[in-house]
Length: 323
Image: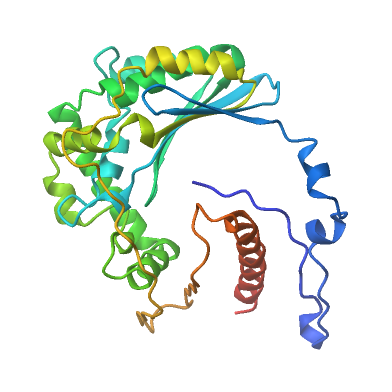
């Protein structure tokens, strides 16, 4: 998933004659101080409705001619075990391989004919399926999303084909050292906890994950109270609620056994060093314990995180140019 960052103007000039001039960050310097109330004037109101099955519907209606609508599911690699680590990401890959109503080709043609985009991603704490479309096509987009998470067939042929795709993806990730360093960071910062595992999982798990593993994971984690249907852009809240009631009424809220719990993931101050003198560059990641998602300080600290990440990236690029 790509990140869209604000443009930065911090440049070090005249390096050759040792004169260093640092310009201020443009977006930071140009921002006039405004109150919290003034900021909210141009932000559409967020409306939230809870359905009978516990599923939440959230919208921000800006009146735009396009819309983005998606399912944010409270599950990811954090909810896996050593035995099935990688199943959430595998499941994301299988979601677009055909349902009881649509083949993979039918699904792709339907999305293409709408001029829409259908995407998904898996993180340590979420699995997300979302669509970008014209506002008038929102009912069709919601129906597609509901079909994907409730009626996927998980055919054996498709599972074997996607198994190879994921194994190749793992090889690509292993060659991307910027990705590797963050996996190492999680492995030591949250050592001994589910957050220390990778999202893709180990190779041995990918080679052994079965259709039963995928179906069991859905029946365990894809429950109404753990899903948010969110829409932004040209989205009418009442209409989206009705669509959700129609298409997601089959999602249950009860568990056959005990409801899955999130294991506490302690933060451990530690370090790991992987040395390779043949490499021309060093990849370094540093983390400190911060506010969790439910914490009211999460968003302010998240903004600060991007500000300093930004400065680090520009300094890093400048250093690379001089090596």
